[in-house]
Image 1 (cartoon, one colour):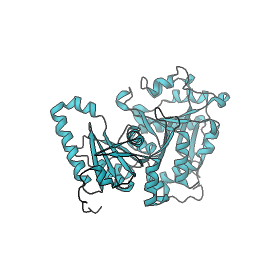
Image 2 (cartoon, rainbow, N blue to C red):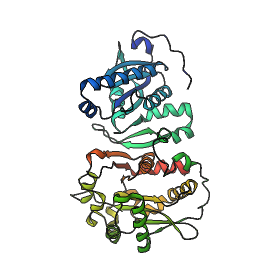
Image 3 (tube, rainbow, N blue to C red):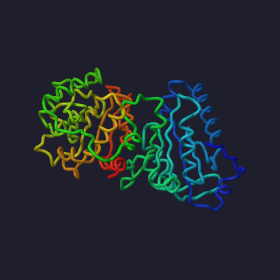
Image 4 (tube, rainbow, N blue to C red):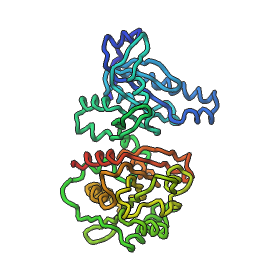
Length: 404
């Protein structure tokens, strides 16, 4: 990215805005700042914080923007356009001034009142909500901010870069359509590529079935599933006896993927789980128990199909070493997802997916589909992040990917 010449510094925000009413507002927030301060002590924390502030201000010089103020450890900055705000956010996430600091960023476009060097109005409150809706490192955009990016990049490139997430804010009547930037390109150096990125999947030819089939798992398939889960997940793997108990309650969500020689190459397991009442799935979701302790009574039977609203993604595992082959298998699985889910529940009744990830690459994969952390690993007995996603968001993200 070329460094542009800084514009003359305006004395006040009112002067910088110059009568405009519509602009991009950006907030930053340090993840786990209270915990970091407590662990480090005030002196070390303040040293770290000043390095963070210095890095932000160095980066801000590259852009046409105005630093409104710092609130605690968060920057509040106004930009002339959304693309500039996004570029700064990407720069700042790549280098926050210290590797111990991870941040989340929120961007919203709207109208607000400018008085002196400060900004007021509902758009400020909404921009703050957009920042704090996701718990982990990343960039969140309101729908208006995403539309601003699309005006610069075009629809195709924008849809490849952003993941749709529907979120219900407190004190707002209706759920809001939000977007998070796909940080996959920033994670490449951190995570082994066990799963392909969405960009790799997107490059797969949409035509044909590549010779694969997805079938409901038989008992022999279930035995194979337990074996490869043990190989892949180690102590986190679900033993065969537990899988069999779940399977006996409802086998409609157990799928095996086979190639044209009928060789097993992967599996996908969905469990239709109960959230109402005090079920063992709630204990798992809240981190009090581990996955293998999930009781069969927490799973709906096929006869209870009309009551099924929530699906737990127990496992997605592709048993192929070749990256291109794995990519084709996942693409084919995506194409069949609607028909797979129809075997479990009425699609119009499904509201949410839930999942954990036993590997870094698995976590990276589900994040790209719109899953968000609802219970962080440090609050859980199994030490894994617990994720959830709106059913329609996941379908929309996948449908855009495969061109439906």
